[in-house]
Image 1 (cartoon, rainbow, N blue to C red):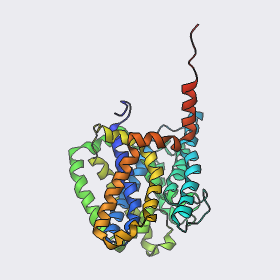
Image 2: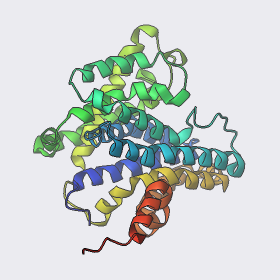
Image 3: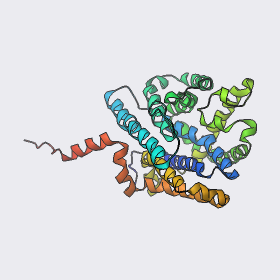
Image 4: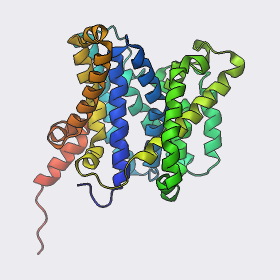
Length: 341
């Protein structure tokens, strides 16, 4: 069971979103099927904005003090320094993918979120100091499409900034409205509408815009409407994020809620499994059986997320996600408590 001090709804949301992350990355194994493009675009229209929003909401307490800066190093900087080269060389040597360096400076595949979240957290005390940073972040996001250098994934740092800043400024009383009956009733048609939009992504936008890492000059959209299109994508992402979160149960769901506290394990390790499945030839099967392959891939991704977040697996893998913190905890357990005179 989740500790009483935690909000079970947030843990439920986190588990749903990290499962969608795994599904989105696993869809790359079934690129040959038309249905996979729709599923991919539908998920990516709103699940990254939702993830960033939740990250911002959970970053409210961050300040420039020693304890929190140390936590930032332990939970984001060190894992990035470890897992960025680990996944890079696993893909390059074991899987045989032609990935290119440099590592760390240019985050690759799933590792971008660690370094971008680290940079967002570092400027959190400024961003949360005034609500005017919210409209300013929208301007920054629109201008971010002019940036074409992927170093430290700055395009995503700029492009997704409004969702993070919105998370910093919304209060629990604001999110409580997601539990209103009319909001829940509107959530379903909203997601259905986004699903319909996803069928025609390339007629009104481009899939590349959903990633927030592609410069405008590399997107085949006229310059006079590319800013408007980016703004539309952001609005759809925000609506989809709130609609999806409104449908997530607020009560403690037992084992599922508990798994929501292990999202970092899922995030850091799922890529190794997906690339292993690719190396074993799964894309060949999905090419021959597109519909079945898509269904099995999605079910397998859900199963992988649940497996990695399960308590037995989590206990084994969690020390790797925060090795310095794990060592400190071990030392603290071995240090005898002082005896009273």
